[in-house]
Length: 626
Image (tube, rainbow, N blue to C red; front, side, top):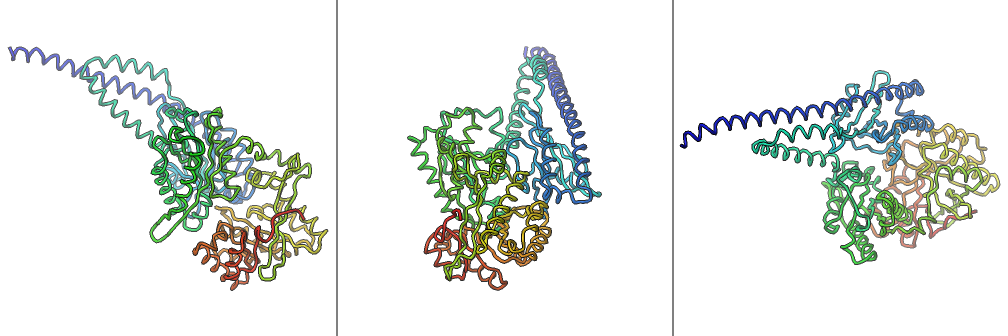
């Protein structure tokens, strides 16, 4: 009986195995069909984008001629705007980002132009690449590269086209795009797969396959929605189909590292990356259970806090103060390097009033901006009434202010700390709104940089101070300029045209911008202006231009130590020693030192102790009209 049963079951077993085999063939074939269709879509999009890219590159290379394309894009604002306008025309629902990057001498990728309509990158901003080996392949071989990024319900890719000039790859033009998977096709193929999986053994095998697909899905989620540096969710996760949020159930905060660029310029970007990684660990261990932490931008973290973890808004804001203090008191150790950072926090305590998460984040961002403007290292909460009063100005509104003569300067004295005498005044740009309220540059300057409005604005500041110096022969005035102004023919031409007596009494304060590819060109322009009678000051030393070798190469008259260092000189030995070292160095090479942020008698005493001759700050005089 047992033998007969065995013989009876054997054909059924073979039949089952045959059915399972055919099921697997059909299943895998359907997967292959789906993949072919998706590959075809990617191929067609790449073909279209590639054609447009070739036109953009050809036009760009024609316009720059013999000039290096990287240098041209960095210093020619009009050219960069034209390129970004062309790139922005390619941005659609499928093509989210179109941009040009180059690789600097340190091997870091940085933005040259960005056609994005939101989250636009700054010129010279570091670009964190995904699948770096593919980007390097495009640089090395000078050939187009496609990086596939499989999503859950979308198929995405980054298409990279090298910009080749005189036989060398100078930069990379790239587009990030994604397309919806063919849902109808998936449904049809799904019916086929289901129809062939009715046998129990096939179900088991398909279960194993589903487990594999689930694990693959999780791996893709980690690649697509996890920040590679910190392991936190990235900004893309907020746009994914996995993310849903009831704004009524959460508080929201943006946490931003103050003066993070100083960490990168002082210790190197590797240490900066380590600081961000450790800070992410600190946040994980500090926030309540159920919170969501997202690395929202370079040194900015978005945190969603469950409301049920706090009694009310007041307790929530107190908690954010403890987070701020905790970060402030931590010393991050990397080999023998000690790094301490501070954070500013902007909170939205009523996100439920917003129509979307994006709008709620904008509220927190407004509060964060206010925290930065009020001195950093603080917590500010979003308040609609305050935000209305402190609304940022658009480029159009700045143009209206230029046209209607509402650009003014307030003047803060630079004082000889030994004699107590004013040696000159720094001209600080302001805009008067329609009601006569004075608006600081933090409400408009960053938004107009790199535009023709900025050039108009700088020229207006020069003209205002030209008229002042012609009227007041007893005055000496400094104006603030960017290194890119030193390569702008319009700005330099206006400076050269000033009367000799005006040039002798005008000091040019050059602020630092990270990632300039042509230091020599800026230096040569500064030397030429100095020969015409202008005095030159390097501004914000410590926040940039921290390489003293650069100082010796530029033939400057003054060096201004950044207030972020000076404000701790009376209580932080490292700050004290740094100010002392810079003061002694500058004394030896004949450069006069100005210290910002002289806010109290204790700071003033320390500055005198280390030999700093000149100072600026509210203790010595506030900015006001002359």
